[in-house]
Image 1 (cartoon, rainbow, N blue to C red):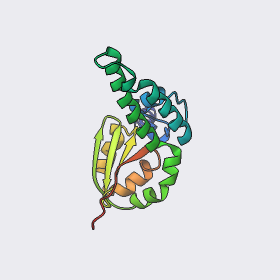
Image 2: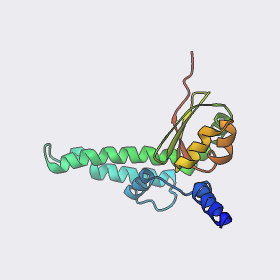
Image 3: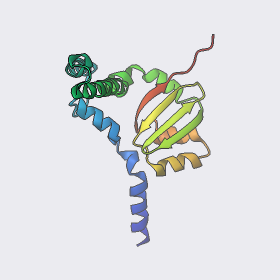
Amino acid sequence: MKTVVLQYIKKSIFAPYFKKKLRMKRINEYKKLFSVEKEMTLKQLKTTYRNLVKEWHPDKFQAGDDKALEAELMSRKVIDAYHFLVSIAPETTAANLDDYNETITSPIVDWQHKGMLLEITFLDGNTYEYFGVNKALYVKLCQSDKLTRFAKRNIFNTFTYRKIKKSEVEA
């Protein structure tokens, strides 16, 4: 009986470690807006983005019309979705891999968790968001005596991430 309980606890706590495809609601919503089922190339994203912007551009509608207000909101959503999807696209991730690998070797300065989103700031000034990190894993990170080591083993190469803040260059 004891082993069954321990196996259940391990499965419930460690399940996100093994689910690389765990995505947040925001990612799925944006992919649905762009009609993306799996991964999309940057060229396809750009084409879809341009078509959506043409379709929902606020200048296409009369001022004061209900459709004009809807178009304004939708165009903002399309722009935000495009920038977001480009930032997590495999091509973007691959292009920035060297910088990312250099950043994750620097110590962690600050970290925040909200919902299934973990935000980590590094000593070099870069900040990354990790999607799908559950509260149990966050608690383990907080309790870890070596944050960077724990994160390298359990977070950095397991979860979808994107850079949200670049380091500031001093003159």
